[in-house]
Structure formats: C-alpha cells, structure tokens
Length: 359
Image (cartoon, rainbow, N blue to C red; front, side, top):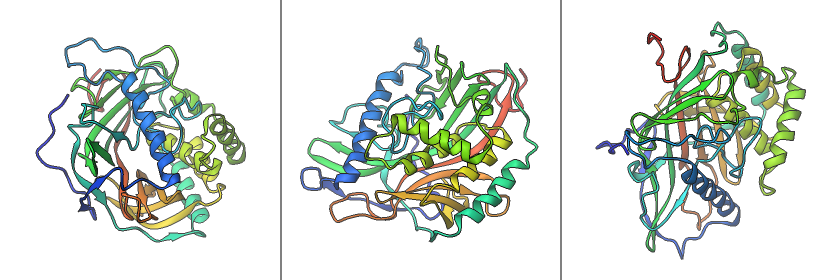
C-alpha cells in the first residue's frame, strides 16, 4: 500500500465541510440509502476480487475481466454489465476502522463545489456539437497486439464509520493508470493507494467487453445503439434505478476508460441526446480544476456530469454532485461524491508501456 501524501490537492472551486454524524441519528433517506447500499455491496465484491493488500513483491492473482476497472458502476448493482464492462466503485460505507484499502486515501472533509445552471433545452444542440467534434479526429486506430493507455486523476467522497461515529470524508485526489489490450483479454491497473506501485494484472479468461474491438462492433446508428444500451442495462439494472438513468450511466462509463472509434463515440453522444431528462450545464469543474460545459442527468438528488472543454468540446472527465438533499442526509447540496479527469489517452505497443516509451 502506498503511503498517503501529506496534503490533499484542492481543485478549483472546491471548499471543505466537516461534521461528525452519529449514524444512529442521521439515517439516509430511502432512495439514497438504496444507492449507498448498492455501493457498499459493490465495494465488498471489489475487496474480494482485488489483491490490494499484497506487497509489490508478492505474487498477484489475476483480476476477473468482469471487473476491469475495479472502481466503477454508478447506480448499478455489482454485476457484470456486458456492454460497458462496468464494475464496482463509487461511494462506500466503511465500518469498524478496518483496513479496507481506502484508509490511506481518506484525508479530509467532503469535497464541495458550486453548482452550474442546468438547461433542459440545451442538451440536444450541445450534444450535436460534441458529436461532430468526436467524429472529426485524427487519433490513431489501434491494431491487434496494441494496448489502450488511459491516465486519470480521481477522488471520491463517502461516509466513513468508526465505532458509533460517522463522518463524510474525501479521498486524496490520486492518479490512476489503466492499460487494456485491443481484444480485452489482457491489461494492467496502477492506482495510488489502491494497488502497489507496480500495479495489478487485469488478465483473465473473460475478455473485457469495453475493449476496442468490442466497441468497434457497436452500432453507429444512434437509435440502434441506444436500444442496445437499454437492453444490456435492463438485464442487470436494479429495479429502483430508472432505466433512463442506467442508460446514461452506461454511456458515461464507455466515455471514461475506453477508446471508442470516432464513429462510435459520435453515435454515443447522439444516443445520449435521445435519453429523457438529459440537460446541459453552463459550468462544471473536473478533478484537476479545468472548467468546462457539461452534459448531465439527475437522479435521486445527485447529478452525473460529463465535462467537456468549452472551446474544443474534448471530453475532460466526470463528476457527481449532490443537487438536492434533505435534513436527514449527511451529503449536503454541493457535495462532490465522485470526480475524475482524463490526463492522457494513447495507443501503446505493449502492456505497461508509457506513451513515448520505446517498446
């Protein structure tokens, strides 16, 4: 386990809030409780799969490819999501002070932010522009034997319980590097505070269905693509999660740690424009403080935002912000429960190879 740095970066517009919350007296509303329950179960499944307590010199067991990113699925149960290859993560309820793999990252009070203004009518036009920008790309096309490399910065805010005391705390903003092979059968993950410095293998018998060749096989017709997303998400969606929200989350997962062909990326944005409840947001900030515009959807008081550069419309990252809360909810309005920023995407020739590094 990496040692925790001595300070936590503060991206633009984050402020700090702090309170001790007796868990017996500050229960969550019914809808949010279900959300956190799902995240807790996802975290349990993740801990069972992740060899995060092994040393850098210890043998590391392979990670099942049904859980390639080890941290994701927002508002979905901890089951294999065939289309996105989506996985566990997000918020977690931790207890008893046990070493759950997050201790080194839980460094301070909740991350909070100002909330951008949502425009229910602005999403179609903005997504059309984003789709055109995604289609007009000179990015290299991966080939068999190559790997997709994605570097990002991530952090979460969650409820930490020790004994009879609970508090809302945040992770250290930390680095994350993922390699996935062209065919989804091999890969590597290095995440500060979650794996050793050397990382863990993502190799397994079941290929990662978010791999490049799988994405290349998706429909490029937005209507057909959206229907496939609905079918796939309906198969694993918790009944309390609206199907439109599950579809929006699925597309967001594909945007974050994958490398879709330009025509598929453009189709994903056009498909998102057809999901009811999707809005544009005039200002949002990614994990590194970069301002942008956002495409978002709200569910159960939280808004998932995909953030794009205001000029180039390049995808910057995602965040989840509490936009509605009750007096009984410890996650107050403005709390950033998840934030991320894509630092680099590249095609490399070998697993664990860095961009620009010789094979």
